[in-house]
Image (cartoon, rainbow, N blue to C red; front, side, top):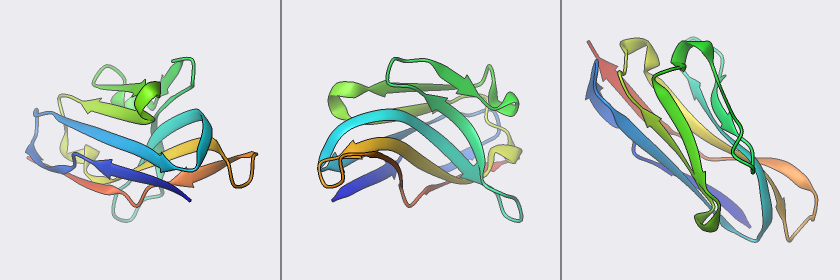
Length: 121
């Protein structure tokens, strides 16, 4: 009933930029927090950035000053602007939304299937 679809991943050189988008669709009543996570080969999935429904943000220390998370509540979409990319930013980026669906009417986490970001040196 609820689907999160990421887009915008790809291959980029170090120092370049990418903008990821994640659109939530389906039987959504409301969306609370949204966030981006990433997982590199051999590493655990980690929080990259998160944003509340009111626009409060937090970032992993490794991306502060380089990445910006934002959202368009009217479009049920969250974005991640990634600048000054480094090879260590490489990984699969996953979108997560804490939302209330019209199916269950309580908040729970939903995940996208991920989009691959590869930063070459």
